[in-house]
Image (tube, rainbow, N blue to C red; front, side, top):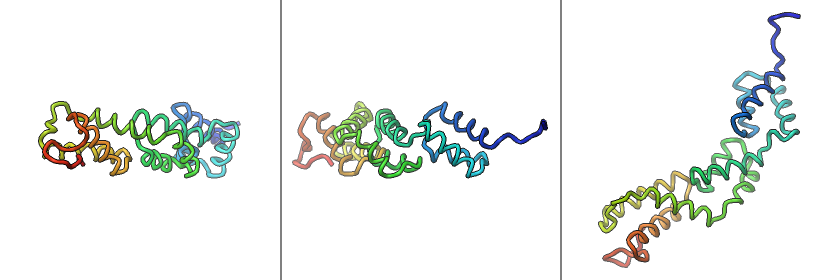
Length: 179
């Protein structure tokens, strides 16, 4: 036997996939990309990934469920942002939709409210209209970056600011809601 023999590409591919899965769950596409980076022939990569899928070490539906639970809790991301992240990881639209069903609209709303309450700076003078408007824009922008729809973001921010001021949503000198 030769000392310099090339390692079997399937063995190398299996080792790469196992090493990737040791750190955290991955989607099939993420693993395929990693194998391509390491110059594993496509047919070998497909065969190895098929086998890992057969034995359920790769399961995009389980991955999507776990991803949604984790990212919605830790980062308070809205469904729109989670859907984009899943798509980037190669999760098809139907699988993503099924994973996103575990988040109710009430869960999403509560997460947005919690984010706003956490990010509202203590000592912000909400009685000053200019400061209140600036704070509203800053907080709504933060929610937008996390995937919340603009209407929902402004409504939640307005409600939190109104609660902080101790009244139902109208400004101190007018009958206009905080928006």
